[in-house]
Amino acid sequence: MYHTLFYMKNIRIITPLLLLLAFLSACAGRPAIRQEALPEDSLIEEIPPPEVIIPVMERIALQVKRNGDEITKYFVLDDEGDISVMAEISDPTGDYSIVYDLGAEDLRVRFKITEKETEAFLEDSFIWIPSAGSAGILLGFDDDYMETWEQYFDLFAKYDAKVTFFVQGEFCPFCLEALKRGHDVGYHTLHHKDLRKLTRDIFMEETVSRIAAFREAGVPLSSFAYPFGFSEPWMHQILLEHFALVRGYGTTYRLYDEEGINTRYISSRAIDNTVIKGDEHFDRSIALMLRTVKFLGKGFVLPLTTHTISESAAWGISPRRLEYLLKTAGDLKLNFYLYSDFAKDRSVSPVTR
Image (tube, rainbow, N blue to C red; front, top):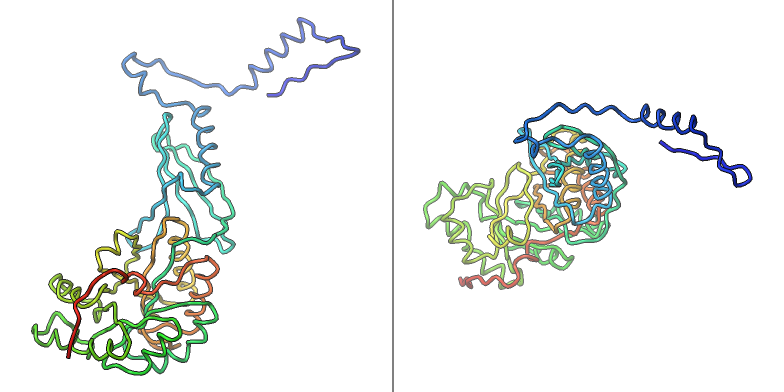
């Protein structure tokens, strides 16, 4: 309510009648707040009225729009595996939840602030402009599709993308060419067998018997990827004597910080054609995955894995999808990490023939 006082030749024209009218007008313009009588012992639990809660939510909204580190964000997965980004804030007036919607193509972030007890809420949005930081992705390709992978070296270079190839079988010249182009090479066993079903002797033959040949040729093989993603704890213990990191494979979205990587076991999210059906679904899913790791702002790393690069292969990624992923990551200013980036200062036992 704004009250205006009129002046004429420095003489204020206010009469008792005008004062009375102004008073009545002010009273009529205020929302009526009904407050039931409460027992004395319940007064301390009285729910703050809207005129208290709403300004608090407006203040929180300003914090949300600044998108700084003062609000700690996290993500949750629903039963379908869909990602939601959330935050919590406590205030003397109540506890507030924040839900972010990162789905808009123009990077307009919509959000909803809710006071938990009263369920009063405020909705707003802001334009998010990603800046350089430490968040990034670990993109890996598994198996023995060397002839196909090398056809896409130029595409990787176009987006300044670095990836890790987990190769299967014997040493081959592809490994040196990949390293020369700034990529990384890990190992993926000799014959791609389910390691859980092997004797210990065959397990060792499949996993570590060829390491020496690679390393003598100048390929460090700092990381190892389990075939099918299948493993058992005793395998970690053995393989971590020979590799700095071991990697699993699945369909759950996981992010890793320094503490998580220090466990030396990483589970990577599958992005194969058969796992994410339809290009439209793929684009939405990848955009949300990448935006989430960037938006959380804590230097998280997102591991992603596929196999060949093919339009029709079930266990692979189409060229169109691959380019969409690389471009989206670049637009978000995500770093392309190699598994060897996290292998530094981790000692492993030498392997001899």
